[in-house]
Each structure stands twice: as C-alpha cells, then as structure tokens.
Image (tube, rainbow, N blue to C red; front, side, top):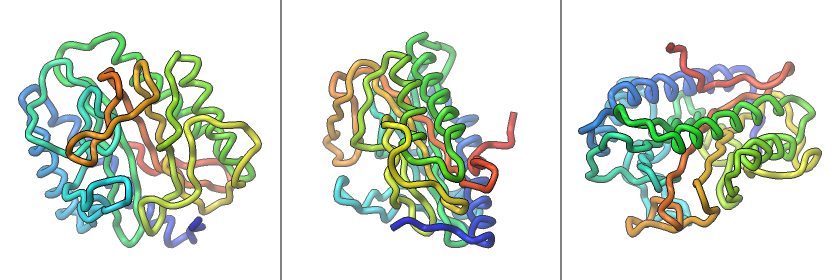
Amino acid sequence: MIEILNPAELARAKASGALVADILHTLKSRSAVGTNLLEIDRWTQAMIREAGAESCYVDYAPSFGRGPFGHYICTGVNDAVLHGLPRDYTLADGDLLTLDLAVSKGGVAADAAISFIVGESKPAESVAMIDATERALSAGIAAAGPGARIGDISHAIGSVLSEAGYPINTEFGGHGIGSTMHQDPHVPNTGRPGRGYKLRPGLLLALEPWVMADTAQLVTDADGWTLRSATGCRTAHSEHTIAITNDGAEILTLPNHN
C-alpha cells in the first residue's frame, strides 16, 4: 500500500516527527558509560506515554521477527545494526550505539535512527562509518522531490556508501510510512536512477542508509530480532522521515536542538 497524505494528515506527521526527533535527542544526551539498554527503553516508554503517542514497536510482530517486539525502541551496540532488542547490557566507553525509534501520534507515524559513540573514546573507523551513513542520508534526501523516482534516491544513497568503501545489503532499506510504520514503496540503499515509483507530493518516506564495516551479510541473534554483522564488525545506521512537497522534500524528524 502506498499512501498519499492530505494536508491535515501531513500536519499530524510533522507532530509525530518532532516527537521522534525530541525523544532521540534526549536519549542521546542521557546515554553514557554505565547506562543500561533497558533504562533507555524505559525512558522511551515514559516519553511516548507523556506525549500521548503510541509506540510502533511494542506490539509489532512481522514475519522476520520473533514477535511481538515487546519494547519501545531498537537499541543496537557495535555489531548490531537493525531491530536491536533492548537487553541487560551496560554501555562501555567507545561503544557505537544505534537508536531507532518509530511512534504514531494522531494516527500518523514517523521513524528515525541515529548512531553515535558513547564516552570519550572515538575510534576513527567508527566515526567514519557514522559520517558515511549521515552523508548518504543527506544525498538521498537531496535526490527526493516531486517527479523523481525511488531509484534516484537509492542511487544517491548507494553512491555515497560505495565511494566510502562499504558493502551494501539490500534486504532491508527505507520504506513508505503513514498510518502504519512500514509501507510501500521499498527504498533500497543502492539502485539505478530513473527507475521505480514516481514520487508525489504528500508521500512520506523513511530513508535509512545503514552499513557494516566489512560485510553485506547479516545474521539473526538468538533473541530472534537483533540483526548483526556476520563477521562481528561494527555497524552504523542513520534515518529520517521525509515528506515529498511541491518544492522538494521536507525532513520531519530533524531535531531543533544544537
């Protein structure tokens, strides 16, 4: 299903996006050496409830997971890149933490992810990997607009990731979003320009470049949810929800914080 939102629905999408951005900003500021992943999940639950919003994750039970998910945020550490199930793990100095959050407010969902390094140690290869996903995300957004095609976005993202030297997995990527979290169209993280669905004003897309340092192969953790790099290498993931407008693309999950 591909949804085209009307102006009232777009306004609600902006509210959802602002909430996602605010929660992620707060969680990043609180996440430090000694923080437990289950604490992050509890903080997320409290902020969602305080805002009168709904979690897109807690009852989520897709075919690729051992559902329902049962938690409020995805927390991936180091080699865990997607669908990270919060667990009893205490963050250490230099850990690469990915937080992926989707919430719905007013019946419209928004989705975003950030990766960052905890503590004072900043391994250069981890910094470079995070930077590559952020640059790829910016390139994908710049390629989006009315009349552009999904392949234009995929090509822009993939070009940045490939030039940075990272293998690209196409099993999971960006997606449409609206009244539900995951919708068509699928947005792979590499592709050919000029191909695929033509973008229209009112379409919401969650774009999410993610990489693993030296492999394109994923393995599923024993928890049935967390996807890790097959080699144990580090990973990074960046995501924004955007709305296609008459003039281009508007980022709905951009934090208003410095």
